[in-house]
Image 1 (cartoon, one colour):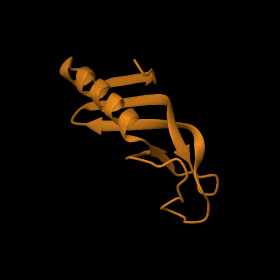
Image 2 (cartoon, helix red, strand yellow):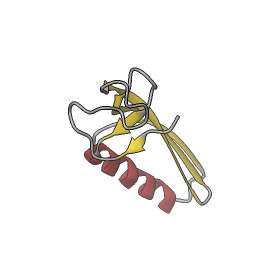
Image 3 (cartoon, rainbow, N blue to C red):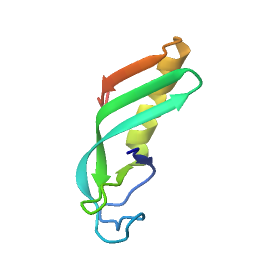
Image 4 (cartoon, rainbow, N blue to C red):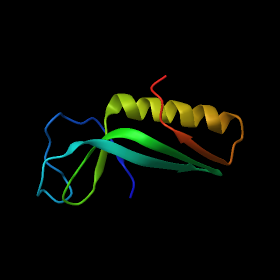
Length: 86
């Protein structure tokens, strides 16, 4: 299951199942571009307790995408890492 990278609100109804409000949790984000596959574990996210859909807020998404750009510049093919805010 892939996390949706988007701005999220504190209390939000899941846009997929529309059956529950999301709760704070963690997601695993998988990004693929060209030959690069990057997996980031333990990313802070809002998670739907009903269907499991994951939503990553805009600030966190920016950090993950910035890291992916750095990794891609070095020609890395596979990167598996744990989320860090720094």
